[in-house]
Length: 329
Image (cartoon, helix red, strand yellow):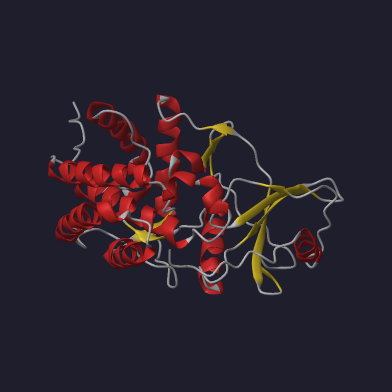
C-alpha cells in the first residue's frame, strides 16, 4: 500500500505538549486527556488556576496559517453575534499559536449531551441558529479557504484511491467502473447556480452538542459552499422522515436567513461527493497510527464490497426526484 500522507504527529510527546501550552502562559495542572479527533490532535486539561481548556493541535501541512486564521476569525464573528459555538480563545492577543513546527489553538472546555436529530424542538432550534450562522456567513467569502467543488471531492480522491492499493484485485474492475459512473453523473449534476457563502462545512449531528440549546463545535472544515451543505447531513430515515425534518429545519431557518429552494437539488450530489471524499480521506491518513486503530475494517475486503454497493445505491438515489419543501397552507 502506498504512503499517501506524511505523518507528522510522531514527535507530539507529552513534554512537547506541555511546553507548547506553557509558551502561551498556560500551565496544566492535570494530565492531558485525548479527545475523539482523528484529523487533528485534541486534548482536554485543567490549568493551575482551575480553568478547563481544550487544546487543538492542527495536522501539519493540511491548512496554511492564513486558512486556520480564517476559521478563527469566522468563529469570533459568530460568537460576537451570540451564536453558541466553541470559539478559540485569544491569548496574548492571538488565537493561533506556534511551537516548533506545530500550530495549535486553545478553547474553553464545554460539555453537553448528544443532539437528538429526531427531536422536533431541538431540530427547530438548530434550524434557527443555522439561519443565523449563514446570515453572518453571507457577509463575505473566505479568501484562503477552498470552495466545495469537484476537484477536491472527486478528481483528487479518485487519484488517491487508484494509487492506494486498498481495493482488492477482484473488486477493482467493479469498484472503479461504478466509481467512474458516479463521478460522471455527479459532474453532470454539479453546477454553479447557487450562492456560495461561508459555511460550517461539516455540520453533522456529532458536531452539535446540546445544553440549554445547541452548541456548534469544530469549524475545521469551514469553507465556501452552498447553504444546503450545512443542512443535508441532519436528515435521516425514510424519504418522508427527511421531508418532515427538512420542513422543520427550513421553517426555523427562514426566520433569520433566506434559503434558495433550488439548492435542494444538490443534496444527493453532495452526498455522493462526501462518499467519495471520505474513502480517499481514510486512505490518505492510513499511515497515521490512529486510523488503523479506529477504522480496522477499512483494510477488509468486505468493506470494499460494501462500498461497491454504496456507490450503486447512490447512483440510484441520484435518479430519484430531489426533496421538495412541503406546501404551505
